[in-house]
Length: 374
Image 1 (tube, rainbow, N blue to C red):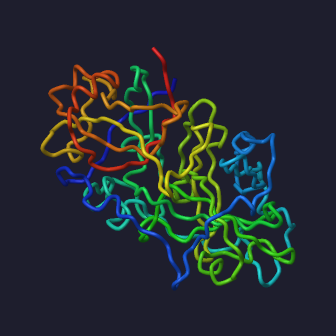
Image 2: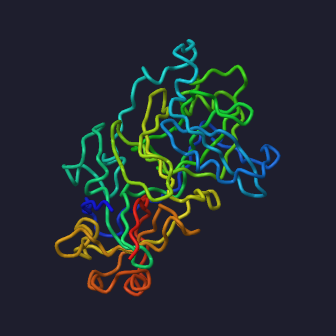
Image 3: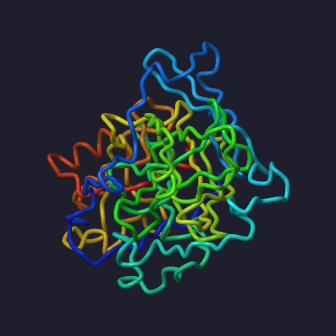
């Protein structure tokens, strides 16, 4: 198993890490909500494709391909569309945009507006705005323990709120529009941004031309029917040419970047699908799972870095779940435990004992990407 250096760059604040890390924000244009609640009557039924969407989640461009309803369970089917943004040929009508020649949005995950634990103002060595980020190096990957003492690795994508942001998918008759990129309304640093996106189907007419819609504002102004789903995707927006080459066993989402639209500009994002059953909202929110961590200095918290074993990068941070567990979520509720217990913590039971009645400090996006059983 590939081992990566696991050191973390953190903000200088003492705990709690981020006073407003979980502000509940929603995206509204004028007085019209971004999404309308989907109903059973609007969906086609099927009896045979409950996991098809994940098995085909191997994107260069990711698009919803079909919508199905299984009782109360909504499943969105994703197609492998490695060249889907060019499926209509090289001609682009005047009303449509060409993602190959469109401007690229400037992305900075480490500005004071975007960062929480990872801020360039506190850690000047963090990558510059729009510079590619290698997430396979510290401080972006950590080695810890799973609930039964499994050695795991997970990426660090910083604090994220529990309110998902919408990602819009234009569809015709339940099928995606060939070549159309998905559309988001926020990027890192914007109010309401989240790495976790709630899929919203946009019902466009047969006459619609791919990539005519290239912004959330245009989606809302179009008057097309919007159908929100309970499906979540973990897709952190990052600078072009960024890399994160690890994925958990069973995650078929691929390691390449996917293009999307933001305000008429192209953005790039990763895809993480380590939970084979897929992520779904819980009462409209991103579900969370516990993780227990300890730092080099209890009083300084994240600013002091995670405590590690002498001579290696093994932390004694412990997740309560793994991707194969029903309760798994890559959005972790972080509870610190005193570092005096570091040596005694190696699994969930010992972490719970060490943490005692400790409080949750923040929610962080840390998808598990490797697991080594003992």
